[in-house]
Length: 110
Image: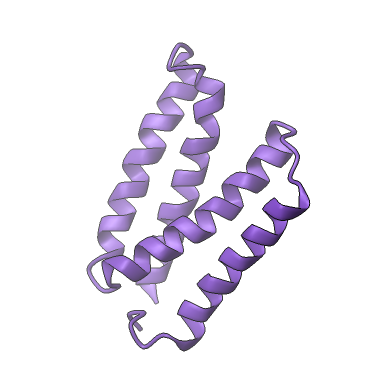
């Protein structure tokens, strides 16, 4: 179960870092730029711990699927970037894919 805790930490660090990219304004602002660099560093470190037990394809599918949804929500909340219905439907399909992997795949390292 610790492998999924590392994956969740990796996803959250990546979401924080990606959200800070806009505020970093092309790495011209020090504070947000440090959040980006440290966040991505921690994200990849935690992902590397995850890959000890979860296959890389499964880990990356979960990382990217959950990350896409969280980044879209962060953009909507932090930067007031609207989500139209096709975007919401697409993200719902991504969430459905993540659920299928976790609930039914024997490939997902348990």
